[in-house]
Amino acid sequence: MNPTAPAEHLLDLAIQFPRHNDDLARLRVALARHGMSGSSPATALADHAVVPQRLANAVLDIVDVLKAQPMYLSPAIRTVYTRVWQLAYLVSDSTDHLLDAVNIIDDTPAGIPGPTGVPLSHKEALGEAGRRVDLVRELAALGAPDAVATAELYVTDRRRWGVVGVRVNIPSRVRMDVASSCRSLVVN
Image (cartoon, rainbow, N blue to C red; front, side):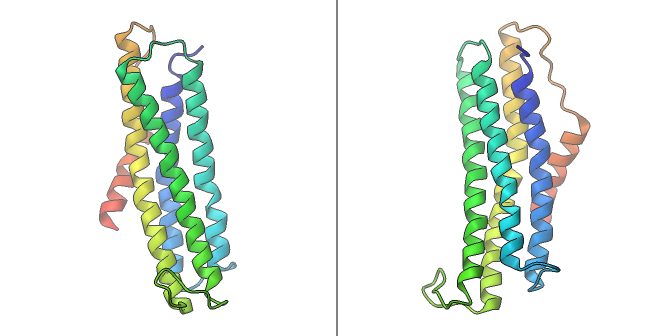
């Protein structure tokens, strides 16, 4: 059993969050322009909802990798489990918000009341969907730094217990992706 596998999976997950956030930024710009090139806004949102679902599967894989590790459940390892589950909830909520945005856009032509109880115009529906995308971007920006911090906590604890060969080595591309994710949230 590779003692660094959970940390490696967490770092891989940390790389995926900024990519997801960048895709959401492009999607948000397209929504703000009131149209999508080649597909409807609802279709584009639904297509992108697959990404947080894949992230959720990756997080659940991390739980399985953690469970496969022979280790003492120290307070730090329990914290690692808690943070991993928080990441799972974060990406699950992201999926829900994207699907809510799809429903808002799909319900507009049918005259179904929006969140305020009044049917929305197409422009208002795109604006409301855009607010959901902004929320998902904020959630995604939290994922990368937390995944890195969780990997560091895991490695630190494993080293404390004398697991040989465990090193904290965060590849520079992870650091750069996480930093750009945090910057893009502040700038936008």
